[in-house]
Image (cartoon, rainbow, N blue to C red; front, top):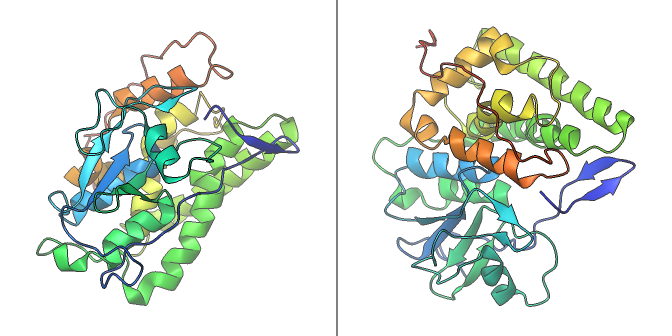
Length: 301
C-alpha cells in the first residue's frame, strides 16, 4: 500500500473504481457462465484471499479461472510472474488502463476480468464473493455450503460491517496511521471487536452457530495474517491471536478446511508485507517467526 489518503493522520482506503456486477440472468450485461471470467489475485492480499476461499468452498475452480501476481509490488503495481496466458497482461495496471485510460490510483486485487468483452468488470472486493455465492449457484458443486443464506443475511451484513471497519480494515488504520491519536483509536477499536468475537466464539463454533458463512470467510484472512504481520509490522500488539483461546482455536478449525488452509500462503504474505512497505520496514528484512502450529488440534469439531 504505497499510496494512501490521510485524514488527520487516519488511513482512508481508496474507493473501488470498477463496480459492474455479474448476474445469473445477465441483466447487468455480464451473465454468470463458466469459462468467461478470470479472477486476478495476490496470495498475500487478504481481500483476494477471501475470493479464493469462496471459489474453492463452492467448487467453482473450473468455472472461474485464476491469475496470480507476484507477492512484491513497486511503483508499477502488481506484476504477473510471466505474461498472464488469458489476459496477456504483464502488469495488472495494463488491464486497469485498458478499461479506463484516465485511471489514477492503486491497481488493486482482487478484480474480475471478462474474457468476452476483454475488460475489467469489478474490483469491488466485498461484492465479488457475494456474486459467487448468489449468482453462480447453477455452477456450485453438489453439497456446497450456502455461505449467504437468506435468513441470516441481515445479521451477516451487520457483523461484516463491524468486522470490516474495525478488524479487516482496522489493522491498516493502525499500521498506516501517522498520528498517535489515529493509531490508538484504530488499535482500541480493533481489540474491542476481537474481544467481542472471542466471547461470541466461546459458545459458538462459527460466527453464526454451526453454519459456516460469508462472515467467517471475511474474518479468517485477517486472523491468518495477524501474528505473522499485523501484530509487529502494523503495531497491533496489545495481544496476539494465540492469546485468544477461542479465536485461535476457531482460526485453526477453519484452517483445517482445505479451502481455507490450502489458500493460505504465509511465505508470500510475509514477503509482501515486509518487502512492500519501505516506510514501515526500510530494511526489507522478513522476520523468521512466529513459530505457531496451525495444524494443532483445535477441539471444535
